[in-house]
Image (cartoon, rainbow, N blue to C red; front, side, top):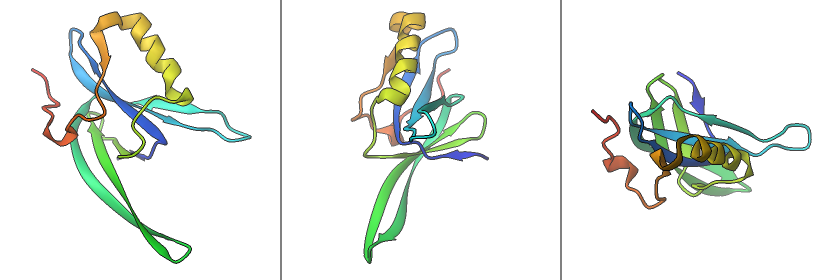
Length: 120
């Protein structure tokens, strides 16, 4: 299983012949690398996780939503980084152009743990 830890993320709903939710993520590039993005295969479940780390003698805890896709991958998304940025906004705009009102971005305040990810 591949695990990805993006810099920012959004959840989209695609209401097509096969309606499903996907996580669209992005990473900000540096001087030698450009921005990048990925979109998962379709969310099948979401769990919460935490990570404890130490910086300059201080303990910090980061909280995540782990979105698991139908392909088996996991996208570990920091709870504080929901939203579009330059690294994934272009793709969101392309999705809107292609699918129109059949694609929507989910609200940041959505309770991801209570979602029914499998649509029948």
